[in-house]
Length: 495
Ligand SMILES: *Cc1c(COP(=O)(O)O)cnc(C)c1O
Image (cartoon, rainbow, N blue to C red; front, top):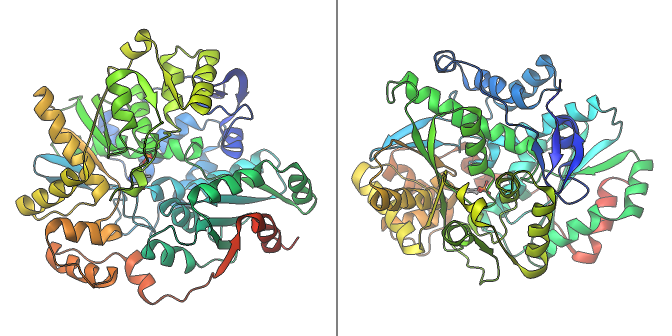
């Protein structure tokens, strides 16, 4: 029997894994959740001997049960190859008593590569399995990181095209350069005059345009989304927690079945939810520590049981966590509401209409696995500097938020359990903030000059992803007004 996925807002909607991957979101606006979290029925001693790819198969095959062994192994092989600059894919680094799980060795040096390297392959297999004949067209609006990771993942994947919209003056110079130099015969990058929200709502309008859908279908195309709520992104993220635990055990850092804590720098709540699923599969995890920056909606939520997005949006040095609506939290809400779809739908309605909701005390009880805290901008910079001065190891601002919250947790609780910290971006992606935190003179220097200095100071090599764009030619220079987004997509598709 296949494991089915149902909508958090209507439990009667039940689809297979491949259908959930193709749809992304349920038509009722709900997120797909597995009917039950499968058990990790592989022994730790077996896991300890496995490569990343073998671990990926052991974990993902439990979730994506309608994929054949050959199909899933094919996806894994294509995803986790030399695109990563280390054969371990997700190496562990021990520093200052914690284990940093480096999730930034892929094509765009941020953790989104871990899932976006495999999503395109899961999607084309899903299309084939469900007799979809159309070419899949991925539409994405990006504030910087997701766009490039999606482009890198989908570039030259047969049967797919990808169009990324970004705010022309709303991303960092490095982020823009990364996107406009993207190679691939099936990719298109388009700047818009407007901010990220304009790009995002423009894309939503295209997704909901029935006329366009019909025109596309007759031309042999259909839209899909690479958004982080797709289970095709969530499931691959469970893998590295299992892999890291098994490696800690294999390396003699922990005893068999010793419980560890996991700290995750959080924005949309996808990465930490994957850790929670790993725990539910049976991985010996004690606390899931949710680290926020100054946009601390989640900290307040864990403190009070009230989720409230009505507040000022703060731009921080950890921009990928500047989020006031953590979409993936809905999956946790559904679960702690005892899978009551009506209750979940009512809370989400309150969120969209009033910008807030409050959970019951019974639901709060079920959040005991989680601990939330946050780091201010000053504390984030101090965490980078302190760790560097103590150990020579350099971390990026997102990871620094986690390192700071880890310290706060230990001070709060005196819990001595060993801790895994999800390290979500390379310091080379945020060179300016990192060098400034360390105390280097940054004025008048561009990001490439700072990367050279960072390389000397940390004795690490400049990643290929940064080296490549130094001299790469600009391949995309289209900029449009928001009302022209539809025409731009049609033009790219030759319609
Ligand atoms: C996306 C991102 C995060 C946040 O992850 P979520 O799954 O959205 O919680 C943290 N750090 C970096 C570098 C990211 O790109």
